[in-house]
Length: 386
Image (tube, rainbow, N blue to C red; front, side):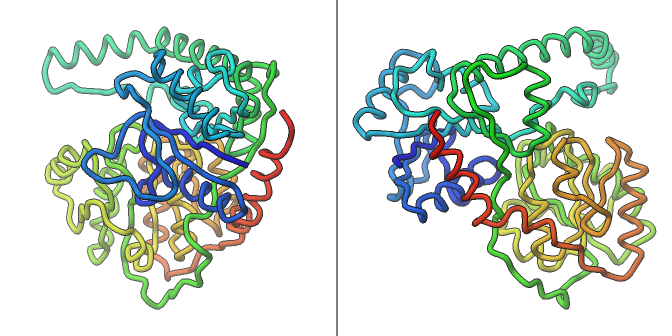
């Protein structure tokens, strides 16, 4: 088949999150004989796009939903004889554009939801930005808190409308877990048109046999340094609780983002020791030496860092704040799930793992994410007639 992957940013191998998951899937499908090309709303800035596969850019980057972009997509699908559009931005409002109700294309439209369906809804109050530094900031925080019930009602209504629209305008909708499929059905009701599938992300790395002899007393965070949803500030506050008990341990934060300066200032204010902000790096050397991976997000979809960590013998400790968490960490031998968002309980689990001898985590769950299994599910999805 001729497959066109869409995301608002270029789908590149060195990117993270949705872009990396999409790139890995596209590469795997290409190896199985499909022809793959990428379409994005925005370019890669000063970085040149790779020569392969084919990359296309929409004519207007300031807005997706406009006549110029619609005509471009329709002409592109006709000229390239696209059989299927895989909309990797379906968890955003891009799903309103990539719809049979708005595009006149013969291609099958697959909406790929790479996040928790309830993103931001289960723990709505945790998204409240609190600032009590001045009287004015305190008043604003209290007003935001008073408006929370109304804002949550609006958010639920908007998400229900979005999924109902997606179910009408898509031929197929792919979720990362059966739990998310059920969440969508409860939220929006039975689909009017689309068929629903549950297909997890591929393993990021080839299966490896970790060399556990290289493990150090190291705790690791890998991800973007953003306030929502990642909330790495929670990890720094947890480190404040455990560092006095383990002065020979180090915390590495691999990644960058707009919150880095605030996090560095928080670390200084808390007088944290042995905290290292490493910036954007290849995470593999850190996976090899770390014993523990920590993820303190308010919400996620199916974070690849969990499976990456397991592949290299790191035990994940994660807030149970997204519905696929129990799929990924089904037992204490694989990792630790902590009730959201108890820093005390998170610190207790972290302290327990830091105090004992290194025990490699169970990796049995990784068989669920092997390429042959995931690609088989995607081939079934793509080949089934809409």
